Length: 301
Image (cartoon, rainbow, N blue to C red; front, side):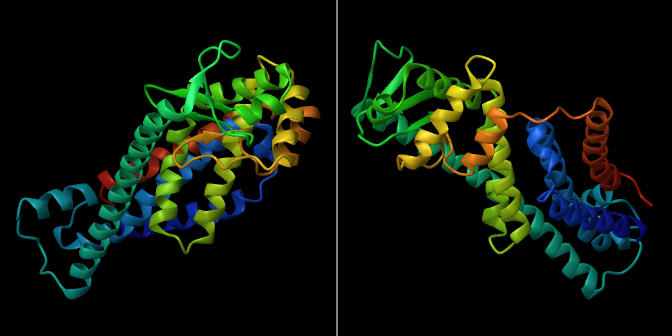
């Protein structure tokens, strides 16, 4: 009973922390650190929520969550008789855990299929251009710039984008897309998109996904400005924001046309970096979150 209460308290703390985190102002100063903390909150919330239900369900075995589930799977006789509440909790916990896993796998498979179809489409409607080596040029008049993530990643720009951007702005945009590819931001976003699919009614989940999407764009901006002028990237964002850019295809990572002014402001007038003590504090919190739920699954309180 103590384990179930501890996991329930941890799940509640993660939910409240996620709600408070959506209004935090420091995240734009350290987007990568904020992404790590979001991931920690999401993973811990999922494990703690299902673990709390399952911890109550396996109480008749008088053991921890994991050992109780293994005993149930092996058909062992519990020390106490099952009652309807424990049976319902077992069904609910296993169902919730299965849904989370299946939704995550389904989202991953759908993203892979979308990218494979898009690569086939690009062979028909895009071309190589000596002016932008290694980049596929899409035959489309609207402005577009995105990458196709994966083992065979590709960066794509449209003919409209080539006409819209100067040479320096184009270099900045390509550096931004290359950052998405290198840092595998598609994998960062996948669990949040899957959780949104599992809980479409949750405002906290919707806000979390929106925040992570913005943080990913900011992280790509930060990496891109190592190789280009931040002002050129800012002007490219403004051009895309006012030109009615083509929507990024499903499953791809684009330049991002949302929250343009927030990104432009931090590119032109970057804020001070977080103090080292604050960074280490958030890293410690992330590690603590990631280890606490699995620890409570294993031990018996």
